Amino acid sequence: MTTIAPVPGDWPTTEAQARAVQDALRDRVILSEPGPPPGTGHVTGLDVAYDDARDLVAAAAVVLDAATLETVAESTAVGRVSFPYVPGLLAFREIPTLLAALSALPCPPGLLVCDGYGLAHPRRFGLACHLGVLTGLPALGVAKNPFTFTCSAPAAPRGSTAPLLDGTEEVGRALRTREGVKPVYVSVGHRITLPNAIAHTLALTPKYRLPETTRRADALCRRALREAVGSTG
Image (cartoon, rainbow, N blue to C red; front, side):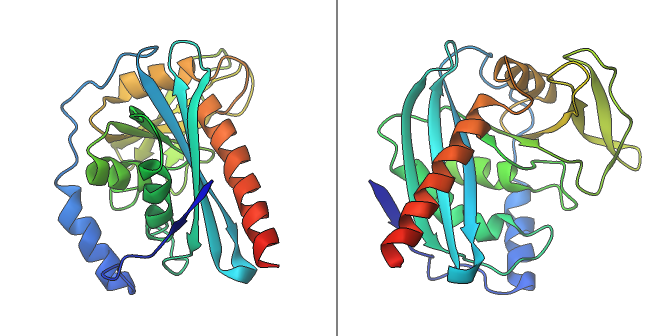
């Protein structure tokens, strides 16, 4: 059953308000904790799908057993897009629906794996940071492209990395999850270190470029959106 996600009454409606929220929450990001060891507990993939014509967003949360990568639980939520499209503020379009999906899970989510960025963000507060702070859970981001940052290509073998840089500051790593295949871009969100975030990403990519968490959440949110659109005609 899909949860209907309302937009909170105090949700930001302007760029200035959203940036003020980022500024207020950014200092709450915890970078000193190592995070859970790979292969232990639960790990939860999060993703969203949009229907811009109907102003809808569908979110999915898929909980995996970190040791076996078997699906333990899943949930979906559908709501109205909660913020205009503004680069650097995309989390504000998705968070109410993602939180509704997380709240509907029947078990603890454990580590959150976001399809997006954490510290690899112009304001050092991407979706993985935002969700981590709001939920108190360890979180990391695995993105498909380097956003606005520079990066040399990692070596070809699986597990090779290269720094993702904003000037001279390392904000994440490019990670080769399949030999000779385009890398993904890993960054810390909350309560986890970058080496551990990379180790988790490798543990979640035994066969494909993208983590199993992302692959399954992507398929589930797309299905939820199709069903929501069908029900609205």
